[in-house]
Image 1 (cartoon, rainbow, N blue to C red):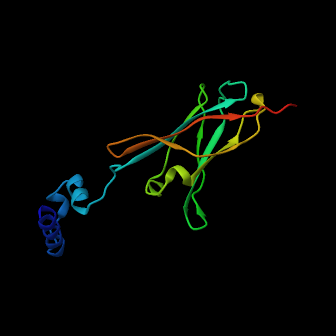
Image 2 (spheres, one colour; image 1 turned 120 degrees about the vertical axis):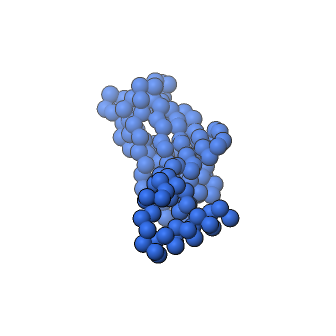
Image 3 (cartoon, rainbow, N blue to C red; image 1 turned 30 degrees about the vertical axis):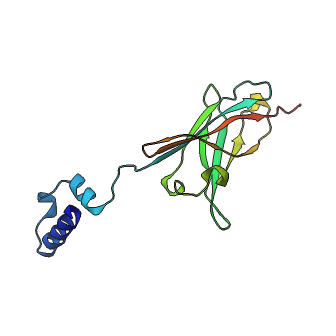
Length: 150
């Protein structure tokens, strides 16, 4: 009811030419409109990238791509591994509502620094680790790359 009243008041004020910004703050107008800059949900993916000798791979570029519908996939969302071989990817909001997100996404090592001499790998299957207050955290666990013999 409050929303309806505020919306109608806003429409009337704009119709009669009054300056809306003199009446309400930007935050109040965003609330009335029902959208804004505040993030409603957050979906994170985390994993560790290791060599076959269990050493963390630092500086590798890892990407995730999700199936968004019939024959459609998202673009690669990328991250770089830290000193521990860990990466964290914050998925864009347009991917948050994908049904069965754990089955719809693939993770791929896009580039591996030369000192590691590991072959690239595509990893399927992420698992929901936690979910609370509009935030979900998925993990791919440890992704192990085979060291190539050169």
